Amino acid sequence: MSDFRIYNFSAGPSMLPLPVLEKAASEMTNCQGSGMSVMEMSHRSKVYDGIIKDTQERLRRVMNIPDNYKVLFLQGGATLQFSAIPLNLMKTGKADYAVTGHFAKSAAKEAKKFGTVSIAATTEETGFDHIPAQSELQLNADADYFYICANNTIYGTEWHYDPETPAGVPVVADMSSNILSKPIDVTKYGVIMAGAQKNMGPAGLTVVIVREDLLGNYRENMPQILDWKLMADKDSMPNTPPTYAIYILGLVLEWIESIGGLTEMQKMNEKKANLLYDYLDSTDFYKSVARPDSRSNMNVTFRTGNEELDAKFVKESIADGMTNLKGHRSVGGMRASIYNAMPLEGVEHLIAFMKKFEQENK
Ligand SMILES: *Cc1c(COP(=O)(O)O)cnc(C)c1O
Image (cartoon, rainbow, N blue to C red):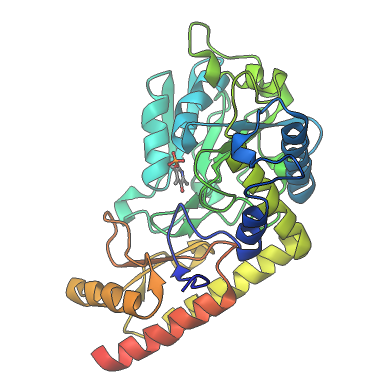
């Protein structure tokens, strides 16, 4: 029982790679000869200083982050960044938002507290089933930034292109649920932010990658902890950072490097997603929720079209060694989150179960 591992399709917090958990376990009571766990260590200690610096260097290497970008390790989740983004970037008080799902909508709503938000595109009328094309984006040349949610965790859609904006308008992207899943050209973005608990590590850590020239516009009389420039100047440590979560991110990055970096990661993720989508397309029993051109490689949403059958599917999948396949309450049906740490065998196991379930219930 002790080595039992379930195929966990949770949207987040989600699976971590087994080698990461094993290494963390081996260092649990004595990390690097310190005689203590990372959780018990001062964030100002020499050992921890090595850990946080190494984690930042690895992230820069793995994501190919240019030197003119700062990497910040913050708390408060992606949700707190919905507030921090306008507070740090609204110089003139205007921003454009693409509303492609629940989290993008929440981010736009929050930004409205601080300035004028203009909706560059929304896909709500069709149930957030797709990503707008570049030609459909209504972008203002005088906006302080253009905001997107790069992967819509709940609806299972993903931007498969880097949007172009009028000169001088930076793109801000919430990559909480697809960061580290594929190589991205960081220079196409002014700010990239992500809660760690989908594809980077445990909950409690939020990563912000911000181009240096965008720092320094933080609003006065606002909580100091939301000021990216302060965080950058203090190496993310004006106070205690989420030390253990940063350490685990370091181990996750070490694992990604060991398998060949993000190019290799992308190949593995595409293989898993294609296997599942090809199967969904081959049968009428299940319907894929997202429009084919906008499908996410991280969150695969599908349903049978019959709510009782969906519930039966979820129930029986648990007995078959899988968990968290129930779709988000706002979409219904099923959702398989197949982040980096989900092995190919997990997806094969799911498809075998889906075939059997189809045979028994059609
Ligand atoms: C999970 C998620 C969020 C919310 O993250 P918290 O860390 O819980 O605040 C925001 N955006 C996306 C895309 C997500 O997947």
